[in-house]
Length: 148
Ligand code: HEC
Ligand code: HEC
Image 1 (cartoon, rainbow, N blue to C red):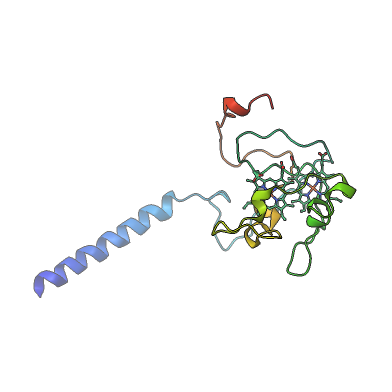
Image 2: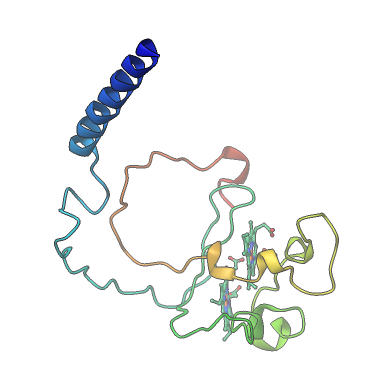
């Protein structure tokens, strides 16, 4: 019994020490700003204007969105992206049709319409701004896709 309570005291001691160390070292992308203080007002970035499709960097990369999407609503009632990119509309709108992979559900069944897991397009496809990367990145495109 006595031994057990000693162990508990040591354990609590270690926890407190660990918390103190981490509290000092943790520095989020927001900076070492006190949580109660207001963060710096972010500078509004300018979206790139509409352009030709952007080169992909690796196989299976969700292509980047080469146009503005401000005001494009995606919710349970409507999906603005599909008004141009669906198989029914892509020809009229001159847009790329969503690929067949977007019709497969997580169990591998092929559906007649976009799978729920591919419904929220901006989960994977992102429009572009000129912005400094938040973290350093040394990624290089794979050879098999370079030049495409
Ligand atoms: C008004 C029609 C329209 C709407 C709405 C629209 N797009 Fe597009 N999208 C286009 C056109 C046109 C292209 C360019 C096709 C080309 O030049 O080859 C394009 C290109 C793209 C591409 C690049 C495809 C590639 O192969 O590189 C992606 C990704 C994309 N759109 C995603 C989206 C997403 C996500 C939304 C909704 C948030 C959306 N689009 C809404 C018309 C539209
Ligand atoms: C879970 C991630 C994910 C979601 C959600 C998603 N996509 Fe994609 N998309 C991808 C990937 C990965 C590719 C490239 C490989 C492929 O074709 O599957 C792609 C490819 C595309 C392409 C290019 C097709 C081609 O033939 O080159 C278009 C256009 C596109 N997606 C539009 C959309 C639209 C519109 C939505 C929303 C209805 C959407 N995607 C939702 C991951 C996603």
